[in-house]
Image (cartoon, rainbow, N blue to C red):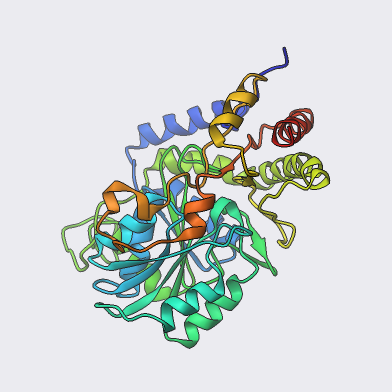
Length: 378
């Protein structure tokens, strides 16, 4: 029996573990556990990587999403949000006392279309004024329509925020995710392309917003790391020095990790293309994080069937994006009640994500692609 192919891989070498342990020891001895050199160096390196002027480390991508809304004064407004997203995107809007208007998805990108955005902006009225759209680069895929979405929203006086939880290193038309609109929030959750255990990063290009964002993550202490003067209504959402240390390690190898993911994507999708099996392509992009490969299931095939069949061959599917759209989540039953989003209702529960990580070998990727075709065409 061939070795198991798993959907999660923590990419760290023995040498990197030793480097981390030495760094953690120094952090503990220094007594500077937050807002120290490691955080500052991680922020500087991340901003340089993404191409933004600023990067602000926070304790989660969710915290970053809320900070983005507050920076633009989007409290008590209406925000457009894809229903095909994580709990966090919707929750961040609700936490600033704003309303959510869901957007459906295009199965070619698993993101909304420009037409869907225009319909929501021009074809509906809302109790609270419309402030903008939270755009989610699902699976690390930047929709080819996204630049047009940004241009249209700006022409309407609306903000566009990027939820880049899946899109570390994704690039389209020469610019990276996180530097394509009015601010972005990355997640460093353990399953993401790179991790800091828990954590996130806000990326911005506005100097004043950078100042306020750093205040918002630090109990509103504008212009200072410590002290007792609170200017803004912030929260305690700082990243620790030890989390930032791991982030530095993973950021330094991110380009290499993405190259491995890209090779695996190519090897898995080659037989899918030949067999005519549909999946969400990243061929239009300069580079993709390849966080998730969304494979659309033909009629008569279910995720449960595929999981069982592939598991029998020691190939384990990863989580989908997302099996239950937000408008069908019990916790959000009062958000857009009675509205239907047919594409999401069809395709959220009718796709699978094969294992694809920075630890996937070419042999494993070829094995996954062959097994997918065999089971999907049977």
